[in-house]
Image (tube, rainbow, N blue to C red):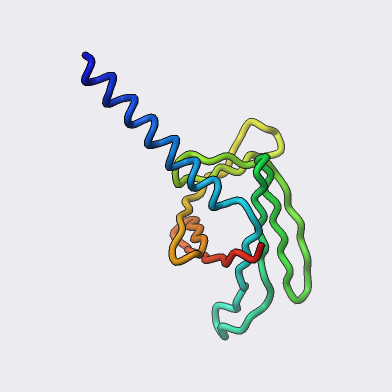
Length: 117
């Protein structure tokens, strides 16, 4: 019984530490170029900002349009949950860090973001 409790506590501590480290790394402003799938020509950029108080801000600047999108977020390991404005539903995506880049994977598509701030 004691061994099970120790094992459970170890798992919880490691999970919290991992989540905390990912959260600290994630905070800041990240940017990714948008490219035309056919020509590979740059068509705009996406800027993501993650704040320490749980705000997610996305700016999309394309040749013909500009969007600003804001909502709360939370983390669970390498899962990023964007909370919908109804505060009931969430959108989930996977993320990780590779060579100082933030990699976000959604529906099998990976986008890599460079930290700019």
